Length: 140
Image 1 (cartoon, helix red, strand yellow):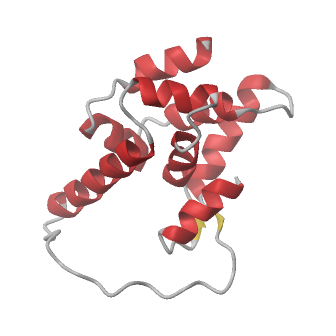
Image 2 (cartoon, helix red, strand yellow):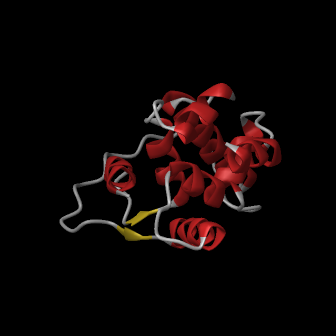
């Protein structure tokens, strides 16, 4: 969660979302979940690229050009809260193991169980089979 908060702050986001948690997991290649992501080509930079493509694709779908430059957002004085997608991922992770010892693989599985949202769209645009990755994560 701490690394997810760091990712949210880097994005100048008011909330920690599932994609921030995914970035945090991808940044830890030594952990099982990070290794599983790396095996499908999603190290931290791969996840960031997939998320950037998803953002551009969503803007285009809404009829908004992605070719614009916004000034950088200012620093947020308070820490980001937990957003809906991160909360759901955490709930799915805790429900799956029914204990307090949730590790990064459980959290990754919780993120991957989402069928709609930023992460599933980003994974699809990156050519990643979300269901296959979920299955591998659950058996790791």
